[in-house]
Image (cartoon, rainbow, N blue to C red; front, side, top):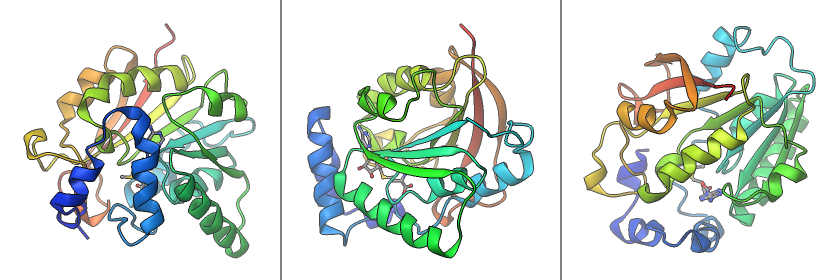
Length: 239
Ligand SMILES: C[S@@+](CC[C@H](N)C(=O)[O-])C[C@H]1O[C@@H](n2cnc3c(N)ncnc32)[C@H](O)[C@@H]1O
């Protein structure tokens, strides 16, 4: 299903959310209705699966004791379980309590079928606020933060705040921010969410505080991003 095609003008209008204080309520309404979750694809993005399998050692996934991963705007949290399967203490944060409840239920079910060596926790919280950082004992930063369909879900005037917040959350000098760049097939003027992005926008937002280590068009990704998605791994600079 195409995220864009699935979002009706009415729903898009409801998600064109200002100010940020309204986000939780508006996203939660969609989660509560349950019938309108066009971004949900029932599985982690294959591009992330392949990156971790093929280049995980390079990113330190051979030694995960004590390391933490964060998925902001985690939805049902499939990617959180994927990070947890590498032995990381992984956490998903979502502003919608309903999303977090669904993520907990999905993860409970999935873990019964396939236990993981790490941990998967889910917290209802606003990405831009600090409470969840304390709750997850991550004051020194996360070793991995992953963004897929989170930046594009935010109103474009929050992009600089998103980048600043990522810089605060990723561990200084060693932490990685993994972005699946999406949606690169549409212009920002076509509206959102998902709000159109470009490689250049990511570079502009993250280039100062992060070093770009890996950047390629993945062979596999979700259908909607095939032929346009890029995956990028950024390492947080020490300063
Ligand atoms: C497009 S959905 C993507 C969900 C998930 N990443 C996925 O790929 O299935 C965006 C998610 O971000 C959450 N969200 C929006 N604003 C947020 C905020 N300020 N803090 C945390 N989560 C937020 C929404 O509730 C929603 O679940």
